[in-house]
Amino acid sequence: MHIWDLHCHLSGVTGLTPEERLSQLLRHADRVGIERLCVYMGMKWSQDPSPDDLVKQNDEVLRAIAKHPDRAFGFVYLSAKHIERSLAELERCVAHGPMVGVKLWVARHCDTPEIDPVIARAAELKAVIFQHTWFKTGPNYPGESTPDDLVTLAKRHPHVPIICGHTGGNWELGIRAIRSQKNLFADLAGSDPTAGYTEMAVRDLGADRIIYGSDCGGRSFASQLGKVHGADISDADKQKIFRDNLRGLMLPILKQKGIQA
View 1 (spheres, rainbow, N blue to C red):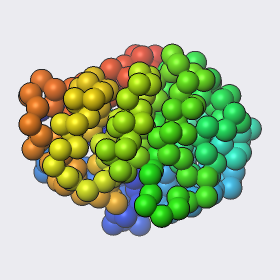
View 2 (tube, one colour):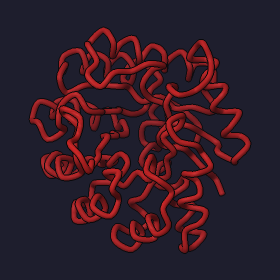
View 3 (cartoon, rainbow, N blue to C red):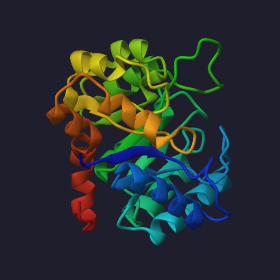
View 4 (cartoon, rainbow, N blue to C red):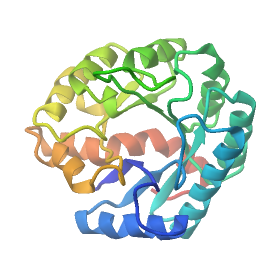
């Protein structure tokens, strides 16, 4: 299988510099057959970053991917709380830099209309858009989106592909929440490697809308790979989930930037 990992972080990894941490991640990735990593957010991030903190974290990712340009893709970390600075970072890191995607986390719910200019500009640049989501048993973090919030956003941008990070954590609810919104993709990363997750996603969404990710270094590569390797689905569908679906989303911007994939 060819494997690309959608969901990687520099936090939770040993190393004193961004370069050292990505090198460490790649050593582990090589052991389990992962070819490329998508990396976002810096070595120490906050749930509600200031504009200057966004820049700092993006700088750390830029340093890391510059060390391994043939193995790692960078996504720019943006916040719906700081739209002007986020748009500026989108220009700096994607339009005029090497990054190929957008990462949105929890500072403000993603259904807020304030995020629309970021989504629209990212779509113009053909950047892959990733939004963290979670259904918590207790209360979510302030500003933390659920898959339901993401569906609201996706309906405003029906022709823009958006990845539903973690598929809401509670994947049985998350899969059902995004099922009818065809421009939403399910990220397998981050929840426990429970039997039946991938099979339900294939049954309800179709294999073309599912993407493997690990959420390393918060989770291990091996536990997250097991969700797909151990699933009772065809090898052809496993290959779609492990690489082909993500590669298909990324190809337009990779071609624009002259990146071989």
